Amino acid sequence: MHTEKLIEHDFERRRGRLRRQLKQHGLDAMLITNVVNVTYLTGFTGDSSYLVLDRDGECLLSDSRYDVQIADECPDLDVVSRRAPTPMSHILNKAVRARKVNALGVETDTLTVATYDDISVALTGVELVSTSDLVANLRQIKDRSEVQAIRASIRLAEKAFAVIRASLRPDQTEREIAFALEHQIRLLGGDGCSFEPIVAAGHRAALPHAHPQDRVIGDDDLLLIDWGALRQGYMSDLTRVLVTGRISPKLERIYGVVLNAQRRAIESIRPGISTGEVDFAARAVIQDAGFGPKFGHGLGHGFGLEIHENPRMAPNQPQVLKVGMVITVEPGIYIPKWGGVRIEDDVLVTKDGHEVLSNVAKELDECLV
Image (tube, rainbow, N blue to C red; front, side, top):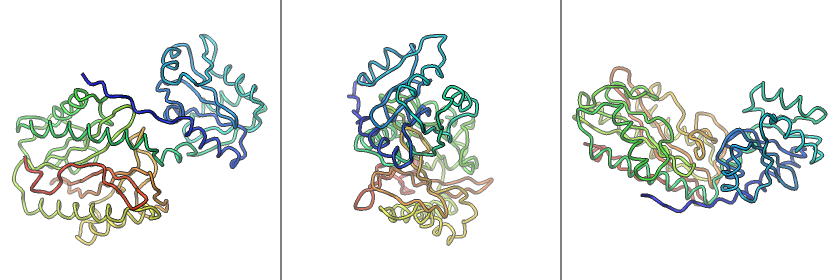
């Protein structure tokens, strides 16, 4: 039985960072409706709840299903809990009016039209100000506890992969391996996978987001596995290619190009460099080797509470890397009817450059099973 201590996060500090932005954007208060952002700012892991945050305080709006959970997860938070059939719009209206809000920021990049209309009707006379990525931009910079949580998620993913790799059999199917990975992550104390594992044998590895099928892996020379673990709300994201048959000259060449591209990109990571420049460091290697059109996706992405977060690592992106960002670096080459190679690691941007957080063997001769 796994009883590891929960990682403690400073939610008040996170709310303070957001609160300082209210004045900059001419807001009296902010309405947080995105469930992941509510979790980031409060520690509450339920759904169907909003956070109203003004310059002096905050209030969580939820319902009676979560009374006990809220008391356990965020006992010091001011909470208004509705009872059926009281609608959310009613307690939202009371909370906003009590704070004498004139200009209220709303997360229109994640709100549905229907929810926005409900809020507009409930808050007649209050100016709703559209905001985009205010909390998402805060989430890009991981604090110390988040980095700790991500490290733990990566270690868990690595341990699960090591068990699965050691037990691989030629008669296993892609789907069986994906199920085994999730089962192992849970046995080791995780909450499941960060996403449905990508397990693709042979020519199916040419599909960057292949769904596992009932294809037996022993029929092919290579097996691509893209997986991650979910632990205490935080995720990891890794990819390796295992050699299940012979190392052909084509596989050796393509694998070498991808590995070199990944190393070049990782070497370039430091505060102040743009994500587009990091992408180009890898893409140039692949282009120079003659495989440019076979690398069609971006180099990587941020991750944390969600598997895809800002920043975006892709061509011509101007965003600058900052200390505390955690990103994936995952170049790939995909050849239809042959297969594909993608190598992915998780990297922390540090004041001195970077730290590769993941540690799974990736030299080609280390990938033989």
